[in-house]
Length: 319
View 1: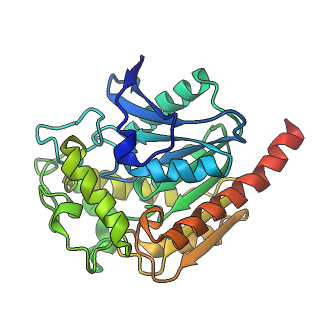
View 2 (view 1 turned 90 degrees about the vertical axis):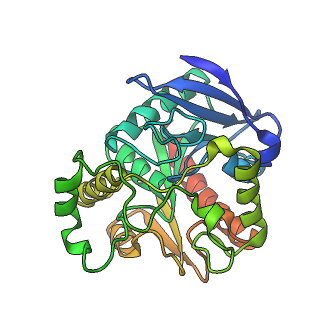
């Protein structure tokens, strides 16, 4: 199923010509896909958002990639954005198992092929999207290069719990407490409850206001804390990913030096064992590099495109 869906492009500050589509994953869950493209694009970037995120947040990213010659797509994963919500409490972030996100990805790739989106294709994963993207490129995939922003390759847990996190996750997943909010999370969106000063997402007041405005103008996209099930599944997914070698793909990865959401040691470890990978640290930046200052955003997109362009030369040489 591919049907036209709403895209709030003015709210997104996206470039002209964007469109959105409803897709159905193999298990019947409805997700949303947005496409920004123009004639002559050098390839397509598949932007995989993080937990709580939604398509309209990445309108500026689409503009940046189009300006650099690349089409871009963005996704509302199941359980967030305007995609189908998965539990009785619609603002709770939930997934039955992390493999379900790959069903969403399958539907996106099928639609992209039907739309004949420009090739080569590149994957860009932010936070949770970094785990989803890494899982995909560890198997059969259509991508020529990868980029990551603060990828969730390990969930940050309290130091006392971290060594036994996977064992606890195995015990608690699918149990009677699986739908509760874990300690430290609530039914209110982080962006709505956190003060700008010392927030964990961005140092840029304008981009913070941009995100706040989305939740005020389009409350249906609001998402709060995760279910305990989501946390357990995320812990186990990251543990499994860690056991696999890095893909044989060019990769650009970036994190802020002030990162306080994902576990940075997992990023350093993964990139240390990624032969075609490059890790860049953004001094003073928080979790969301694509929501940071204009200079940091530009630097991040330039890093992505440098990686993509280098990989494209090889793609066209063998194409």
